[in-house]
Image (cartoon, rainbow, N blue to C red; front, top):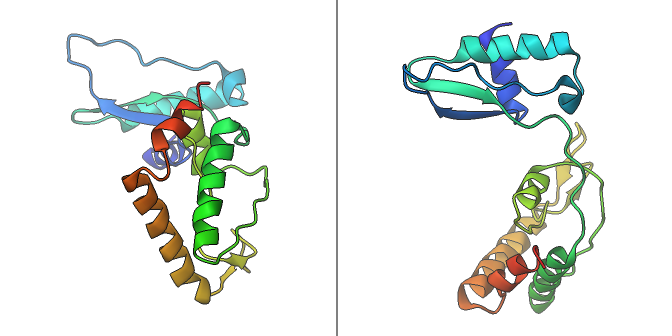
Length: 170
């Protein structure tokens, strides 16, 4: 395995970059059960070797997580957040259509870390993440206005971010 393979693993979100351990703490890096990653023991050994090779001058890498990220659930905190954002949109004369995609993006990672969030609040368009993806230019301003209003409402307390976040553990 090459450093490029290790970089690929980093891009997959499987690695945390951490300060290198002191020379006196020369312990082997932890490994992850192959079944947790959906990989064979041989493939995991190659990745582990690549991770070890990539460590240099004060930087060590540790295998973390896996390749499985389930879709984000729609819990009470998500409902509260979506309601607040939909209300902000309506106050600007905009309507938002919510659709479960079953897909995976940064929002899944944020949710897993305990942070309710909204995915894809960007511009309107279609064929997302494909060669045919397009955006409607008139939506650039409306989404910027909506984003600014959401942030203003959070800053003024009109959207109670603490209450929404608390609903994640309720």
